[in-house]
Length: 300
Image (cartoon, rainbow, N blue to C red; front, side):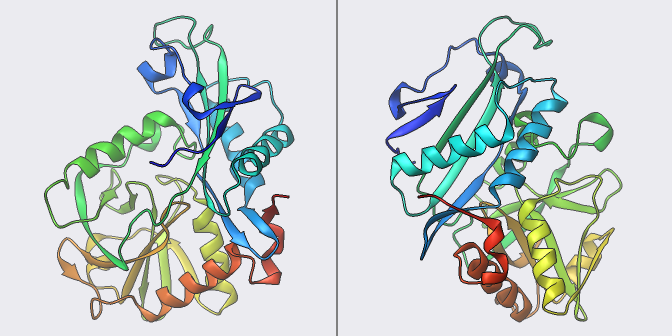
């Protein structure tokens, strides 16, 4: 990855190479941290962060599920994020705030390890660098909702995704797809899932998935341009026979799905509805749709 100038590290900016932690940092060993992925885009008004408040509110919610008391308010963290973008002088890129338990004690119980917060940004292009991706159902299920706080964005949750994507190494697949404990489609390794059948858009209902911020934006876009969006249980057979499908996420943005378990969808190209939604989303994040200017925080 490409380094930038400075990282916001526990209340102050430090050079990229000096933002380091102790090897006995609690979260490094047990996964008890919370993070966000946020994009900022080049717009006519300057670098603009997409849905900053919603991301930081979720960061604090996630930290709270771990009883992690950060010494910063949501507004202070939002200001810190803007400061990181400003000082690194990038027109566009990706922001990673991470809250974690630092060095202080070992053992599963984190209480006694000091809460820490770091915020970095760097240039990052397409997360899934293909017009349309081939995906494969993982032999692992999405983390069971009764075993965790399923709507929190916790570091340890992503071991699930790591195992799934490692299965794909050396294959032609670009991303993994999780089922839930009942055999319904849940989400990708780092994305929410949508499909289109007979003019209706379907997406897995909440309960086993991360309630993605890009997901909610896409649902809003689709509804406003006249598509019915239904949150429901989706089987693999439903998905195999759909007309189009796509992933959404901060990193993935809107990425078309070409095939699922080697079942090619439609004509194997980016579907027309997917293209419409993707273009509408990119117009919003790049400041080209005045109706959604409130979703952007311009960094000056």
